[in-house]
Image 1 (tube, rainbow, N blue to C red):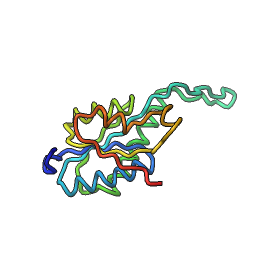
Image 2: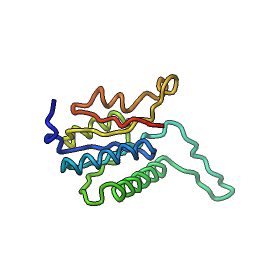
Image 3: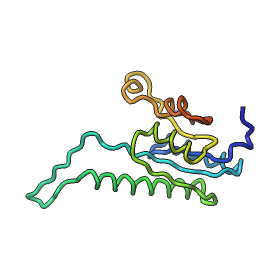
Image 4: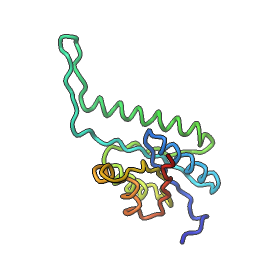
Length: 155
């Protein structure tokens, strides 16, 4: 078991949900108590299927994948700014906005950052929803090389 003093780098995984908001609150509070470095990560999963057609009669060329990815990155940065302002304005926070598979990228980034703990929320899906979408929190906890704090869904 690690000594609490060894938790000096905390990676907080977020998306734009109330569950991630709760996890960010826990992660930043823990970082303050432990005087730990913080990093936020948001993973944009690349859309598999999307409608890229526009209406040429109206002069709308439609959206193409690079445009959608740019919008996702902008939204991720806005999310980070909001969370830092609310929970960690006095902390220096590293930021990772990455494209790919959420669970894989969280684990890889934790290794790259040298995280001694990962904090993330869970949507609390069960049954068929869990079977179809899987659980990012479950996958991260199975594959991470450091402790993972999963902030539960309390709805």
